[in-house]
Image: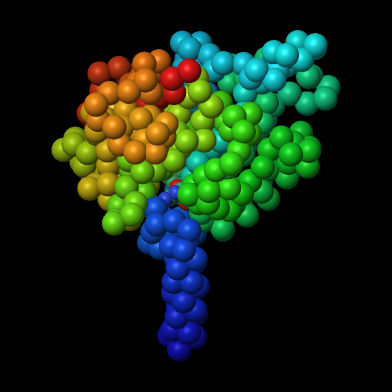
Length: 327
Ligand SMILES: C[S@@+](CC[C@H](N)C(=O)[O-])C[C@H]1O[C@@H](n2cnc3c(N)ncnc32)[C@H](O)[C@@H]1O
């Protein structure tokens, strides 16, 4: 006990310091979330561990992204079409926000063509990916894991795959003066929105607006989250966070009040599109909504088959969603 107390005090002071650092730049990250996710870092890549659900959901993310791109492809960069040589088959720049230990980011990096297969076209058409997370322990785990695959390590070295331990707000600030071709074609936000802190200066709407700010016209913001309904309370809090062997998610992972309903999200997506364009809320309608596309589908887990899209089941719990920024 005597040795535990100073250690606990040290951890608390590090977390307080981290939190004050983040608050200087942003307020969307809560100290409780950082502490919770740090504690899961060492088991992140165990497919049977606490991040099991994320591992199981990952293949469906690639399918859903592919369906968005097939529906409305991002516009090719003007600079790419001016070039004398044809643009590469995989030409999309990705940003993964709240990448955690890299389950999705690394799987996407694996689809970036290498020098030996440079004409390869994959369903997600990734040319590069930047993955960010505020939890430093998770970024370390992500980098260490990525280095175990030689192709992925090559992408880390040549800059096609980058991990950054930073907040979304820091990244947005660093891109304030960026040209359109330094922004992203696809921003992904898987299982993050329900962890964003709401306070005087932060909200899910502000967070979504920041995501939309760094997307090029015609690009997609694609994510997944959990609806705030009674069935989702039963499934995601009572059952999923029950003690082993019933529960599959560590206790304290979710706070039901932070879950987001699809109609709320749709409203924030519209408002975010308008704000990301002119910097202010403009309820009177705007050009920003002209070319908007919206996709939303519930997802469910079927033992033996994995996670599948089940349109109409959005209110039952987990759902995938996507918004395309107007051109
Ligand atoms: C459930 S994990 C999802 C990780 C990853 N997106 C995946 O699906 O494999 C939630 C992640 O969101 C991050 N996170 C929490 N609050 C955040 C915030 N305000 N901004 C960005 N990321 C945040 C956590 O550090 C954690 O890595």
